[in-house]
Picture 1: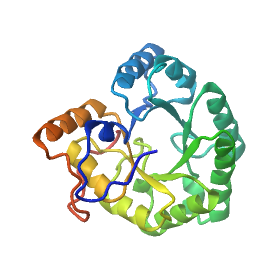
Picture 2: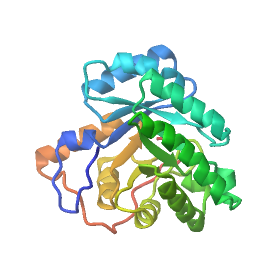
Picture 3: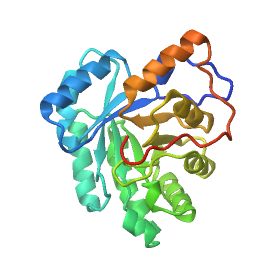
Length: 255
């Protein structure tokens, strides 16, 4: 599992690779495109490829022989499927070989104040995931929530036993921001981790997220991030900055 890097920590390129869940979630991707991308990404030994549920078995085959793992999404991208459907989807994904599940909480129920329903929905997927030793991350869709709702989502995720809280799907506008990940880190126990997804496309943005305690990055800009890491490592400047700097740039929809 990824580490929390204190400000001033010097990273290696592999440390950066270990932070990355590469997103292959666009609906138009063909099986051939997913397979080819997974094979190429596995060469970089990133933490995981995050694929659509229908692609889990395909991805697992494509990364065979590498340390890269297979992550998938549950109730994606709106979080509005029933709890029973999310559980069934999670079970199938685990059977197909996923080791991490990124589930979208029920955004409408959260905004409507039904926190018991939100917690129970998360807990049902967590139970299934943890029975198989899988990591479960909870996607908030921060662009659709106010701060009070984000804090409530943190508390529901914590109470449900999830492993991570995660900012965004990448499909609803907005994306990861420094204020949001700072809020999420401040309102979860140290045992929980924070994943920033959406708009983290430069090595400076990634390092700024690390400074706030983020331990995983959801992105489709893996090569740009690794190239930036190589250049910074060669210059001796692949270093986590002090926390509290300017927010990392956000480039709108998508990863």
